[in-house]
Length: 80
Image 1 (cartoon, one colour):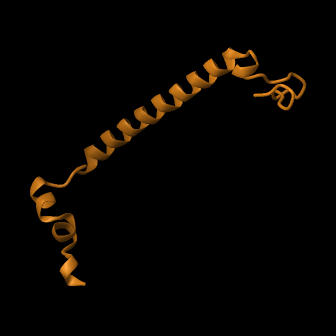
Image 2 (cartoon, one colour):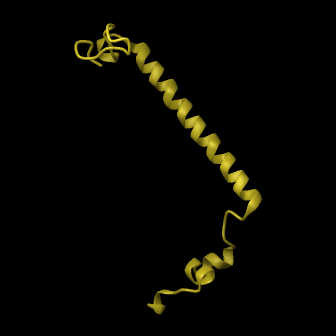
Image 3 (tube, rainbow, N blue to C red):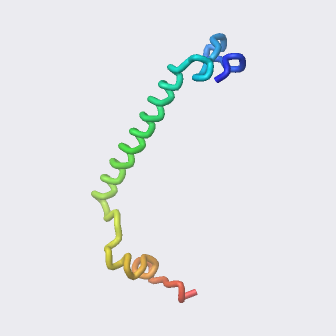
């Protein structure tokens, strides 16, 4: 961030980025990205676990071999 054109939320302190001598801002952003990734992965695993308690998460191997359209919906490309 160029401190000549950007300010922190208080509106008076210039915001400087890595190229302007503020490496701490990059570290803050890196921690934020890692926290968001950790949250997303954790939430996805929890959601999949809960769904797995209620229903199957995957079709049977034999259904996959024959095709899911045919085995689950009774449709095939030749029907059209």
